[in-house]
Length: 548
Image (cartoon, rainbow, N blue to C red; front, side, top):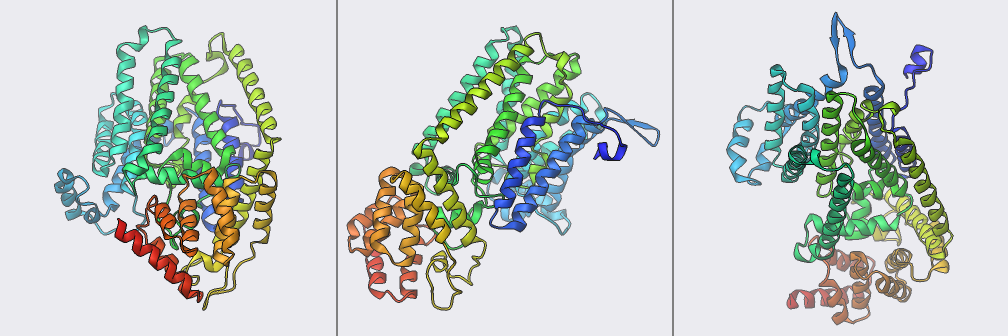
């Protein structure tokens, strides 16, 4: 826009141009793939707004002349943002429904509720408010510094963070501040090479902890966010390459993982998983690329002033909060907060210039290019494998099925998603899934054990009454991915229809039917006039209830 307005080239390179351009392109593709175009394109334009905000702050002037005042726009915005978010949250939050989450905060909540005006508008979820404020606080602190006039803004932001009762945001901010304190106390004495090793060790430790949590967490805490994270991974593996489109998690998760007829969970509560589910591997790679650039600038960059050092530290702390909190909740990508997702990159970009990099910059650039070429070559080799091509065909099939079904599905016009595949009394005609089925069959021709294609085909066949074919596909899916929730419930249903209540109950016991999934299946067979099958499902449910 500056180039068009000024009539001259006003472009100044920043280190994040490549990853953010790739992120934009993947978001554009994801918006086009979304089964709900209104929601998908709506989120896309918010992402565009976030990238435009990055561009204007990263490339804009350090100070602007306004009515005789020289105003630093970046510093002013970063000083105001957390306080404005906190003020909006405190004014708009429904305090009554939040009582009891942390009882010691209830008196303060009642005090806010007593004078709170009744204002129309979007209510910011407390976890979103807490996550946004926690991530932006380090940047606000540096923007205000020792200016006492700005300290009330920090105080307001801290009150908002406290009243959000977002323990994940508190812990993430506390952990990042503690790490910064360690660096201030001892880190400056360590050789520069120690920090990359330390950070890599922390990343590997975190990845190991997440893997352990995904393995045992759902069994220990059914219905928790760990279970949502684990089962959300099943959804990501259905469309690993392309993603299923922007703003598409809720009904896809209900339809193909939880197997319920209405929306249940708005997102997976994990930034990385949400990004993968919606924008696929390209979007996830773009975000990872931006993080690698941030790591490079923080470890190998050389500041020309103390101000650069403070801004760089604040930006890295903000990213640290986003990433840590993003493991348990998604305040940024999973909400309108995506508008602010790229703000931490701004100050890293402004502190960066080619001449400010140390003498090893050229060697690192060549090494990075070699790594990128190696990764690309490995990717191309993997793409030639039959298993990879089968995964891509299954990905396309899942995408076609999701768009065909969920673009038209509305409850109670369709009482259940099965009615999209088989005519039910009083429902509109079923949709055509021929293209999706053809992709699944192509996937199985390349890899007969492909879990996603087998499960999706089995689900369609079960809805259509092709029970023998459904059993064959679901048994194959279970053999390859026995941990997938939908496969266990669907295969248990097949066993119940075959009169094998013992095996049905064994599988159903391993899933949480707390949303009425099994009673919904019982109702479906009655709705399509299969009374005998309805009775078999009823008997299996009774046995499950008795044994439990």
